[in-house]
Length: 389
Image (cartoon, rainbow, N blue to C red; front, side, top):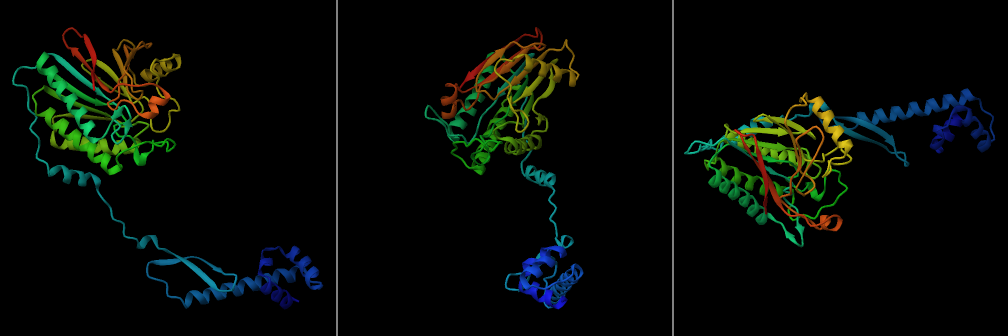
């Protein structure tokens, strides 16, 4: 009877997956033969054993390439034995790239830049320039033509305005250039969430090249101008449009500045909110919306929930209540200084790009600009304004 069951299973291999009890009933219904459960179980074992032998014979007669092993083997509907291969992990030679050394090699091709100090004694004034939402790669809007040439003009306009401030006030003790995020419009014409399609006029490589080249020109001119005795560069690298793409682009720029102008203090802010103390003031920097966790960005006017969130952040960072705290953010493409509980200033800075068709449709026309502030280190008074672009 076992031979009879084997012949049936070889002709109908689909029934091999059935249990022995079920197979006993099938044999009776199909062949009108009484068999036992144990006979069915033994027939199935014999069939599977023969399959393994045939599979082993296939393997022994097949030349397996060096460095590979069998991943799986199976029998086709026609009865032909087939198998798939995969590489043996230990045989894969992994190329280990030391990116830190690669960066050092790249930077070493540049001679150290000469950071020129002021010819006259710098005044006790501190200048901070707040840039945000450059969105390099964005197409702008029908009322705001925005491409690599327009971006270059706007970067130059900011630089010339700084030089005008130097002409008016004299050299500064310190100039800080801060970028509050979304310097790039987004990778692959998408925001970080990959849900928002963007109108762009550059691919990823072009956007990086334009971003890096224009910032290199900007900082080379600034650091060799004698506009200040000291310089800081603060970079927020966590934003909702450019995300990790922006992080990588900014890290390349930061590596250039650190390598060529080692006297410049460069600070990276990779979190949703970061804090730094400068000239006795605690600055909290944020893009206003992050790349991953925030389901709502920081609003133009802080509500009680946002005020509680900021208060909790101050406690977590051990910033005392009596501290002078200024929160500076971007994201909303508008300029606004709003009252906020427990801190001196809650400021949203304008966008260097300005408006897009999406912004026009959903909100309103927003003007391109850059915010700045001047701290008198003697009176501790801060004057602030914007540069219209």
